Image 1 (cartoon, rainbow, N blue to C red):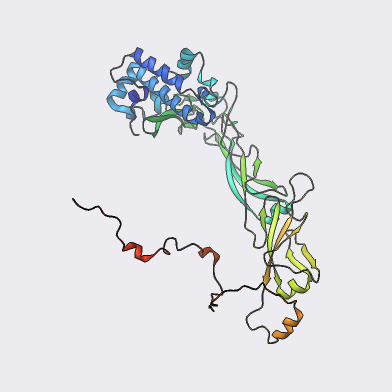
Image 2 (image 1 turned 90 degrees about the horizontal axis):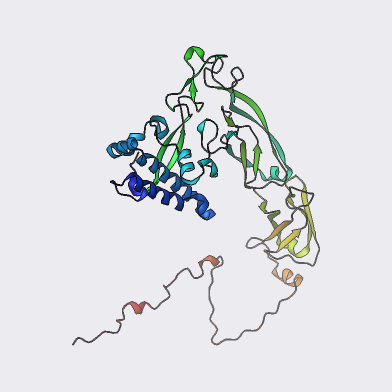
Length: 417
């Protein structure tokens, strides 16, 4: 662990008296109290608050201060502050200083077994298990139920998650002093530390251990056994990217904890034809030049439920390249109610290949004549042109258009006196 200067953290000298340390802590704790700052600064304030509290706990006690002065933070690495020293209890300390304990701060109370974050009589919540789950656009449109196999830890049915045989007496875990966790400091920035609670690996956060002969035969003292089951994940029709499907209480079980959830976060797979934009769908449809001029009636796109979407375009109403057609009510279904978004179709005119017809005069006779506006200019310059230019190249040469002679010209100079 990288050493943290606790004196600097409290703003006192290394020769400060206990009274000076107490005053400095009182001032620092009040200024960094999470309830005294705006919501956007609360997370940083909580880190600072816990850091100055830990610094005070170490420096105010003569024994732990001597250990710190001699060995730095390395003196507290083994088991953390809660595992090997009889330091000041932060709950008692805050009750003395402010008339409240850490249980009065959101997210900083102590739950059963001394673990932080709970309220008296309320179990701490176990971790949620989060999975990213890819779903096709078809399944998001129609809805789907998926069956998945799951393996998790479940409280042992033989010992009810205690870890020992019936009527056997456990011993207090020496590694965590019966708390189920150890406390340590971690540096998160220059002059800034955070106080962390690390689960005890020896007792698996139960705070006690059994002798080998007294351990449960089924779980071997682990308190949990492996359970395999099939989970059903229901994806409602109309769901979208980022939606969460929550299976409550299906995460790992552990003694003294409320079981967390399994959470599936939906990720939409790219579709080869259709694109989703909010409640709507869009697609590009290819229309032949002849169809765009003379009309057509045919299926132009296959929908997500397998239906063919047919369009009938009348003769005499020409379609333009890039024109957008809208079909009301053929977009994505709403999750609530029977409504749907719309389907937008972008027209792409497919032109014939070069040299497609020898009878140009027949085409001229069939199509209406276009008489362009007369543009005059003298003289008239005939130019070749590039047939496949890219509009994105416009303005791409930046300053290369400037007169190259500018680089050779000398600017104004002052005559030397």
